[in-house]
Figure 1: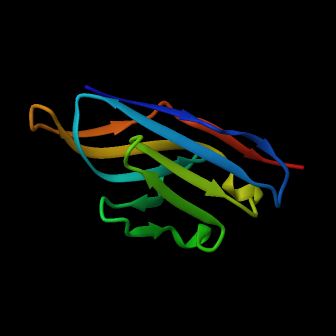
Figure 2 (figure 1 turned 135 degrees about the vertical axis):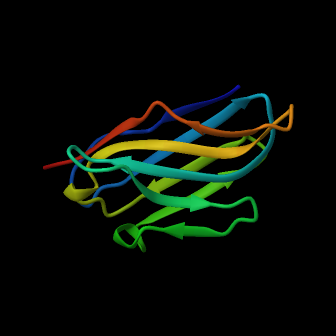
Length: 120
């Protein structure tokens, strides 16, 4: 079993910043992709950003230049730094981590979600 614990959501004014953190623990052997998804009311969940085990990153077009994803392999943690936030960034943000367990079984773990609200 692999568990993810997220932190860092909240209410922020437009133009403000928030930092989301997600720590993975459990029977981890390898961690491959670490990413953040979001789901706004009435919309489907979408990929926001992902960082591979090699450090390559990819972002949805709407957040390029404003958000930055990074990972700390020593702490099994992924960070999403969100700057210049807009009301349309309002959503529940979910952490996602993929890899293999100590039993060499693949896992695809999700966090519980953290609310980000951008409003004046």
